View 1 (tube, one colour):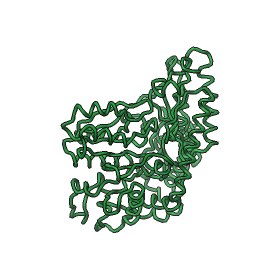
View 2 (cartoon, rainbow, N blue to C red; view 1 turned 30 degrees about the horizontal axis):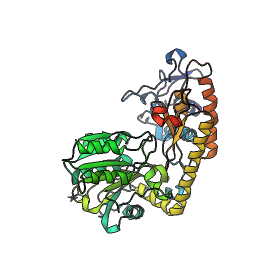
View 3 (cartoon, one colour; view 1 turned 45 degrees about the vertical axis):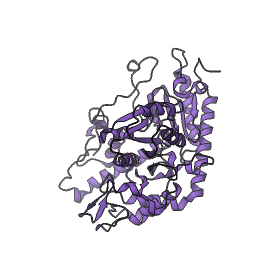
View 4 (tube, rainbow, N blue to C red; view 1 turned 90 degrees about the vertical axis):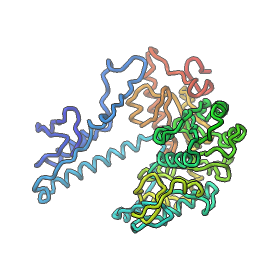
Length: 486
């Protein structure tokens, strides 16, 4: 039942217990102890000699191997399990300890853009149903256990936010933000089969995955120090391929720095470069696509502009217990990749076949509970708390940057990788970031800041190494290294 740790054996009161399986006759307290070992939250510290001088120890990524040291094995039930109930008790122990682990990890969750503040207890009554929204959301199939009514209601709400009429849009609830990008770029490729995909270097990896999957020519565009697309470089690269249509991924919040590409400037660059009516824009709004509409004076993401599609994640700012997303495109485009499926008595225009029918209900529930004003308050809270974190970091002598319209605070990568894993920080090179979501409170930020400053004082106390220079990552004005500190 429980994944092996070390050599797979744990000494429990003199009895060797296999951690990758719960044996017959095992005492409940022994089961709990074995599970606790496998579920250990903190990793053991590495020996000093394994850590390179002056640089953090980076965890090696080995495909197919990293999680096998702590997996939960599946074992065949013993013949008398139904009578003794030992198997049920063992599984209950695993689940109880796993839940305890989730509570602990949630307390130290800062680096990834998920809103963990939600309560869907009222929807528990629906978990007994296999709800599947296979096929087109707007065409009911022969499978009757679906949630299309909720899905279309959610899509209508997003279409209003992005200013597209009901009779002019098509969309669906995706399984994640990546699926939204895959679909948006696919629509662009179908509209312009010989088009070249342009994306900034700081675009999400799923954009480049789409290029590989669809065998599209892809041009990476340089970025400004903020992470925003460099439209001068974009213009230069467009003119090298003026004979081919352009398919552009515009970021409404980049993955690492939370930078928002200037949509209006991208459109102006395309039209002045001779690409009028020969371009397709997909807006990747995974996180900030749902925050921008509630920020005063923020540039609009709107279908009144010549864009082709927008996608957002549902499990990020909104908050949802399972990954999901929303993809909206123009109805006129969808027939290019739509086909009838007699087996479903519907049409197929989505990336996936079966789609989680519970996700639209979760989104519908939250949209109705919070409404426009509720989301507006949460956005303001996130931006306010992000500024608080940035200011506190700088007060502590730690280089930090916060883009306008963003709640992603970029700062100096912690030297200790155990600290990085404890707080689940997303890192790239010399920088890390915290994404301030509605579930991130001032108390949680203070807890993090106090621990960071305390640890940091020990990392650099002997003067043998110095904090890294971040000038190339966040600009000299945001770097507080020994060279740029004023």
